[in-house]
Amino acid sequence: MAAETEFTIGAQAYCSDGFCGEVIRIIFDPAAGAVTHLAIEPKHQPEAGRLVPVELAESYDGAVRLRCTLAEFANLDPAEDIQVVQGYQGGYGEAEAVQGYGDVGSFGVGGSVSGMGIPMGVPHSVKTVIEEVVPVGETEVGRGENVYATDGEIGRVHGFLVDPDDHRATHVVLQEGHLWGRKEVAIPMSAVKEVDAGIRLNISKRQVEELPPIE
Image 1 (cartoon, rainbow, N blue to C red):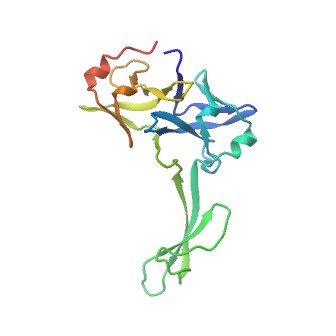
Image 2 (cartoon, helix red, strand yellow):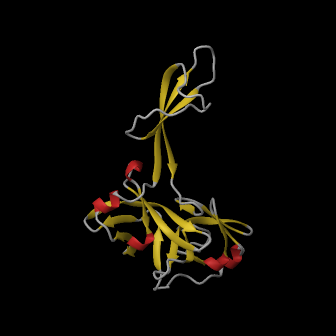
Image 3 (cartoon, helix red, strand yellow):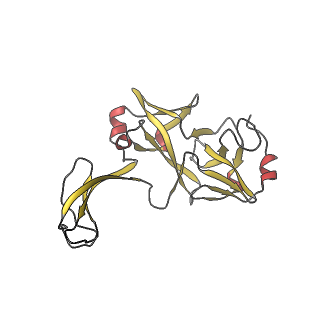
């Protein structure tokens, strides 16, 4: 399997001029069977996370090297949609309405959830809402998501082995601590039934156990 590139969740990522974060999610296109993006985020800074096209990434010594500078990384599409919302409490027992303020740092006026414009009442809470960005028609695999054989859970996703030429995923890699104690188990994509809220296989635990180890 030396020809494949291994992208793993939690890998450290570096631009050409410095560290930029770690891989927090891997974006997968089920129709193409390919990895399309890596969501890379500096620790505890979701506003700085970016969706990196896989064409810009290569795996090296367990880390990810990007073919871009830190400035170019900062101009990529955000990995998280972050909005600040203001809660209001009505004066006569009305239900709480929520006023949206758009992205962090902007203070435009939006509408209430009732669609009646600016809600009346006294503001009493401000909340930050963070939603993960996933391109339309694609899905994501994040840290700790489960892998299920036909007869039950077998472990958690560690990452994917990817063909460097067309970025098609060739194998799903299980995280250490799975059922069989091997350092890594690579499951061919032909055994993957679905990638959505975890990974579901079309083979049994015994069939997974019989797969050859990664060389």
